[in-house]
Length: 445
Image (tube, rainbow, N blue to C red; front, side):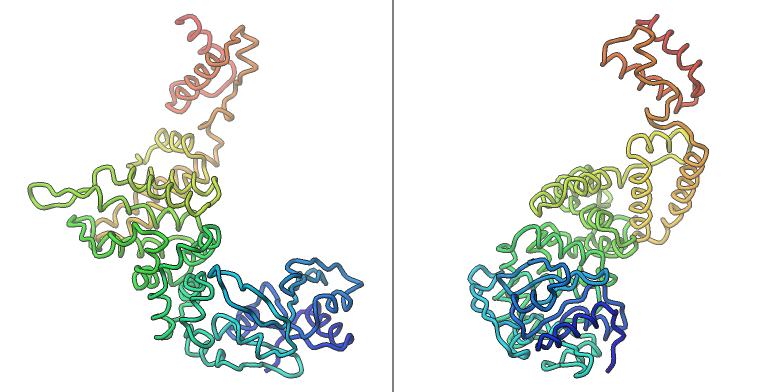
């Protein structure tokens, strides 16, 4: 097996060997090569100590990224290559980090501490692929299997539970039976993992091509992170608009969205407020009055608990808030929505609505035509530079001050009134016309 490696990576091998040491590509980059993917990052392991690694690359920039645990990063040829000394690990008292790290000259010991067989692969340009735990076969069989005892692996680091599901979603692999048993039995330990790490894994999982299957088959485990998923499972909506239960609808809608984190998060939460708002009418038809608000509250609470960034939380909550709102396919309506949300977020809302429709009963697919019409109107409004925000007005606060209006609140009120009139096409967006309308508003007051 011969891999086509970048010159920078080959140079790292050369410099380590010049210093009397041996390095190996390891982990995800080797896995990606076997999957016929082009690796983005290159990680290496070596029998050199951190200080010896630094000596080998004394002519290059070296960053001590995790030197206590044996890792330095070498900047070479436009690549940031992490090089870690072969190591053994002690117990994991905090279920996340090893209590102690011991350097070793033994490559197999280093590979044996890793999570999954597909990540316990090493490669050397002359020695070829080193596969001590059957990772190559597991990749060919599209299987996720732990190195050694899966219960021990998960007990060492509970984040591996989510990593297993993330790999299943991203790669479309199946969990091997004992690995599946271990992640299911130990999923409660996820509560001990840092919120930020769980959020990062969940974002990647949600953007995976196989997210639908993982969400439906691993609900119990994901429920340890998002408990509101559990009541959504098998919840019959009893409504002609819906041919799926709440969770299945959510999973199908998810896979119909672009793999953009805030869109996928919004769709994950968009209907999780339904179980607590469910009512039946006299005909036995189910309704979910106010479910958007409840779903928005759930999303805000969970994403804050996961310590997601404020910008993402804001986008997700606004998309959930309006996901079920009717939008009229008129220029006036579209301009008002552009004013309310901004053009990028309004585009996102259309995507959310489209995916939502694709996960409903077939007879309601006609709604897709309406969404396409709205999208075309939006494109036309933007292309023609039509006014839909205060910054687009041909008049601003300085103009109003020049007219003798000095109160800040009054200036804001007048500008908003002018914008409303322009959006409703009552007046044109020209400075002369807006000044005349401002005079009229002043006279009325």
